[in-house]
Image (cartoon, rainbow, N blue to C red; front, side, top):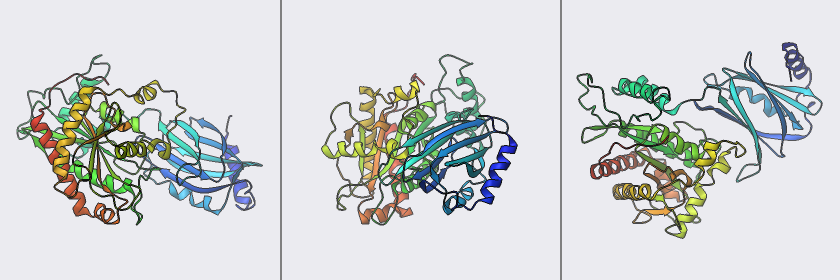
Amino acid sequence: MQIQRRDWLKVSSLALMLGWADISKGASLMAVRVWPAKDYTRVTLESDVALKTKYTFVPSPPRLAIDIEGLELNPSIKEWVGKIKPDDPNITGVRVAQNSPGIVRMVFDLKQAVQPQVFALTPVGAYQHRLVLDLYPTAPVDPLESWIAERTQSNDPLSDWLNKQANATRPSASNSPTPPAEANAPANTPAGNASITDRLIIVAIDAGHGGEDPGAIGPNGTKEKDVVLQIALKLRDRINATSVKGSPMRAYLTRDADYFVPLHVRVQKARKVQADLFVSVHADAFFTPNAQGASVFALSHGAASSSAARWMAQQENKADLIGGMNFGVKDTQVQQALLDMSTSAQIKDSLNLGGAILREIGGVGRLHKPKVEQAGFAVLKAPDIPSVLVETAFISNPDEEAKLSDPNYQNSVADALVKGLQKYFERNPPLARKRST
């Protein structure tokens, strides 16, 4: 479909000449949500019936045209344009008009070329039918390079070192790159950076849920995705100011804002930056409001350690369905990541890590269980990174919901988590070891 400038002018003029109510017939658009992120921008159109679409990408200037059949344009669509923020990394603006009888055209003016994924989601949870537009930059964001750029902007004394290691790990340099967590620091380490040693400890912090997936919602409306992100940010700051026996620690966040990251992508990101540990932060819910206390989980190869642990894993593994993952993508890496690649050694290390965290977090408040539980959590399936999932409290309990929203409690949880990480590394010094990417 070749789209000319004069066609846009005709479409725009038609939209201005016709009243919104006059061109509205068919489905009702119930909500429009925009989730900008460095990795990609997601636009979600929620409607009362499934929508049929055709889309075309025009490279110069970059824009995406989507024709939607049977969409009812109502006054709420006018408010949509204002949802595109100036700092959106991918979208400049959006135009909506009646292209032909029964077909509405949406045109996204883009800041760069994208690889769009457009897919439909059937009703789930509180959502009705959703049409999802994921706009991925043609040049994808590299987690390691993005993380190093953040460290440089924050004037981290390790940024120069990390840049050198990133250059060394690019495919052109070697078929078997040396990960930054395993490389030796250069001999000319600047004076004044005495804390920089030959071993950098990288901890991947995973704030659960995000974007379309709110996670559990407390009785007073507190969303899990919000409180766990706040805790994750506090934990990041503490990790970045911590060292273990002279080895500096640095945190990497799988998400640093309110957007959705599929479960397997969280694992891929942690492996890309060669994380030594993976800690997923959550705030669980249960059938009754009486459940209380923090929990720590590791992966299980077989049966879950309890029926409650199995239920928790089932709830957390629904994130891709609620958050909206495009399961139709034929990506071998995606398919492989969905398999259980865990190893017995990884699970053993994860249990040790979980025990160290559980002992520290028990000093903050009540524990739901006195030991690390195990179940088939998809987000813990990195084959070479000890991984745990921490349920910081029950957001379904009104008292604990209030605590989760309290910055003082969030600080206490972050303090306990970083102490647990320190204790783990004191007993299990990080060693150089080869990992696949």
